[in-house]
Length: 413
Length: 192
Image (spheres, rainbow over the protein chains, first blue to last red):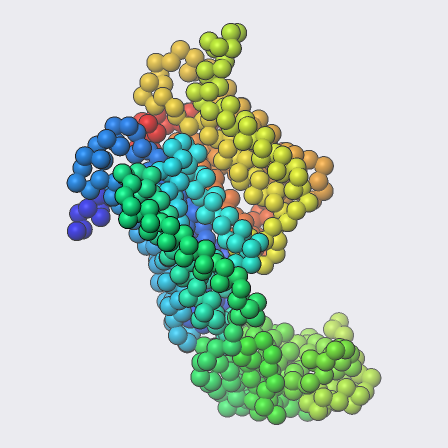
């Protein structure tokens, strides 16, 4: 079994392109930061490279298939035991190499996440989507190479696979032929299961349909293949129509069902379990900040919560945690503005979600956060008047009474 | 020159005729979508269609450089001359396909640097990989767009640091390299 696989991999142009695939994987992976603090985003971002690997593999398969389509090769293929299955072997070889490159990046991403103590489940749906999207791409590549017997087959296949998700967006089919790619934290949110199942099914149907059409164009047509292709086509159209009719609300990320965890004690930082590693960083930074700010009479809340889903009203007495994982420093600290904004959001006031912006509360929050940044960095805000103003602003923000903030404003030097 | 005996077979054999038509069509699409933005997968911001046009323009323009006659090539009478002419034609073809989407458009400077960088990569890829040059151009182009969506737009920043004049020199140098070396004639990627 191993020998034929090695043989077809050696015949595939994807073997030549494999080093380039690895470069693409790691270039994309390390073009962003902040994904290594939670497993779901690590897997999602490490899978983003499939949007490049899939079209590249499709082009390489189309190139190999086109190269095989000489009259001599077609006659030889027709007389061999394997027949035109060699085309599928070429596609499978390119798929295996592309998957291997992607999994290399995925392994590194998960290792880095583990070293940061990232928690949460591995999103297996994203991995299944990645595998099937790339399989669909190589099948489209095989189809293009088999039908468009020209040097243009390879770039055409690659461009088609790259443009498919863009075209799908136009028809309200967001996510079709793509996998992963989260550029923001996935703490407390997850993909709707119905959407995920339909997207996986659609990618599998694209792969199967493309392959059935390859069989039709390269081997003597039998009724089974023709009927199978027709059934697959109908099923694909049906799944796309169903996807299009699903509520737009479902297409946005949904609140996850993960257990809530709390880290630290003074203050306590709580939220959906997948963000535990970041809560530990936040709890440590907030504790240090609290010790310094208590000297100015500005107390911290006992607890800060990270939202689950889009909107959060934390329990009374809890502040809202602000997190920008991409700005966590190399030595494991939150960005100063995140620390300041967290402290300056001691209550999630109903007015924040009102029809008109609560300007007095927002002004107090802005001044307080700016003052905290300066105080923590030791670059200003140390006058008694500023400390007094900060105390009043904090009280106003805790009670959601903008009028209590007074006229204190703070601007950084 | 008798077109039937001289120029036309050469144009056809090296796919210049087809590529010219596709380049003109690409130029037309680029011209009509000069102000159009497109949402690419995993990019937060939309990007000008011009960037996609640049990638397609270079892929189309390097096609005539692919080896056609492989082992027979050294025995062809005009091969040495044509090897010098082809990169020139490729640059002309690529410019024909890209220019309508950028000429006269303010703020297209970085996109044009992107196009010139891809053109250089395409010319070099022909020398190194022959028939797989399209893969180099597409992979590089699409990867650059995805990486550039990161905070700080690293690719655009790097491209902007290089003056237009230097890009022009780079294109000239890669044209020379492609003219001197040509596409590899005996590689496992040579077409039939």
